[in-house]
Length: 362
Ligand SMILES: *Cc1c(COP(=O)(O)O)cnc(C)c1O
Image (cartoon, rainbow, N blue to C red; front, top):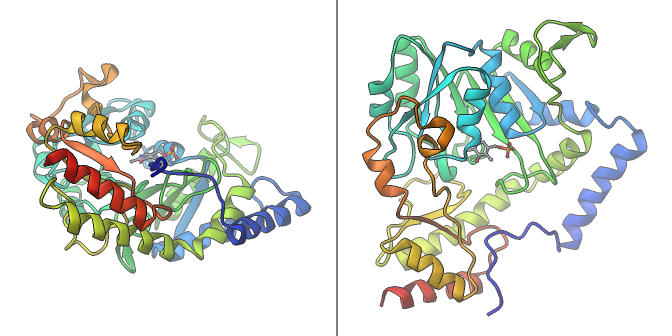
């Protein structure tokens, strides 16, 4: 068996390549390289997919989070409650507004615990930023209720969860604002950096459009200092093309995940497959002797990832922040391991991964 890659970003499929090249060609021949018509078409398609009124394309998922928080007025003096286990972009976006992140514990499915969020609310709490981690919806309805009861905003970090949820009530359709990343690693991916913010509020949408263009309206008048966070027309055109195929990508991922779950549940803790609406940004198991398992798999040429080995509140700049006891997060962070499971993973590769994990434990 040759190397089993965690994720191979090259495009070998000639048919897919031709479609993407064609989409790029149309944009280049027209020459509107930023905010071209494909951007608006893409925004409309995403708003429709997520049953939202407005979508605003931006340069990255990180920008989406930062600008979303700014668009609802989060800033210095505010606290924003988020999860302990996520890519660091989630906490950084909060801090870059001038607000302080506050860290909640997680449940056994690695998603933010609403009970912990409730414990961490203070008079300064301005918003909650849950993540739909690994591509599984968090307990979003409970969080909506907590946000409503406490009059604080809910900002979904849906970066890992495009298409997760029940059709018509997907990730991105719940929060006051919702953010997506379409970076090349995500389930729904551009061929470079891209992000998006969704909302039903016209004021918020208009502020987002200003915030992504140096804080200006009508091209020249400054209303709030900001940086340039626009999305490339080429990326929007590629994403529009790939939107046609995203359901296939998701079902391939679910198929591999189902196979792993069946084969591995005796050896490691696998995700709960009874939740029908996960998209498996990662297939993350919880394993005894995780580090030794990872090293063993590496020697068998199987690439795995720990996402993420350091809890956000344990990163130096966040160590002083308010946090819950994090008993569950501290336990789980020593056990998580993501194994190769994406639309390009073959059944042969998945079978090899399964065999080697069984070999390690027996
Ligand atoms: C990828 C990701 C981001 C950041 O998105 P970029 O497009 O890489 O800036 C934010 N939050 C989470 C949970 C992510 O997985």
